[in-house]
Image (cartoon, helix red, strand yellow):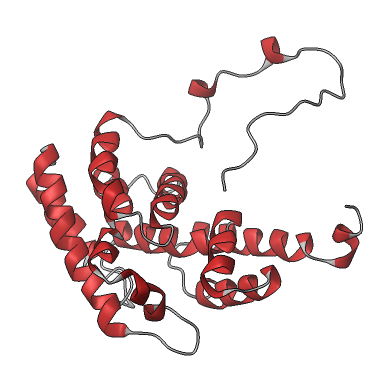
Length: 228
């Protein structure tokens, strides 16, 4: 589900649009540029499995935010990698995808398969769009191990891993997890938090994930629910 973009309400009662800042002048409002759109257009057909398309776009936003705090990181590695990191799930039978990550179970063989196939597909896409060869090598190294590899290879790998995981505690991530496993929102939050908090590499992602988790926890509390 996409967030609300329009409202019929205007409690102030007058138009304030002339006084709003120009989006282009602000930091922290990422979008895909022309090269990234070309990558995305080729990746999207491989991501229409269990919500991976929406996940990858939202994780792109998180990665772009983390890059603001890490100028030493190569955005030409991080951003294509996050768009492409899960394309390999398209090579796993759809009825087995969730078994790979289900609580109380797990299929490490399928996780490894999606990483390996993801690196192969990503290489084909990046070659087709003419991405620089050295960047392709580094991107594929990140993708082939982004879930199974516990350590980080570089700051770029850390940002990709952190963006991927932090999505789970966003509203979009929790909506998706609820549907995956038939969970109530508090249970989905507990599951996501257990797999995110304590498993991140950058201080910025740790703060972001803790803040998102705290907001979701309060949103489900009795005082907040009583306001509805």
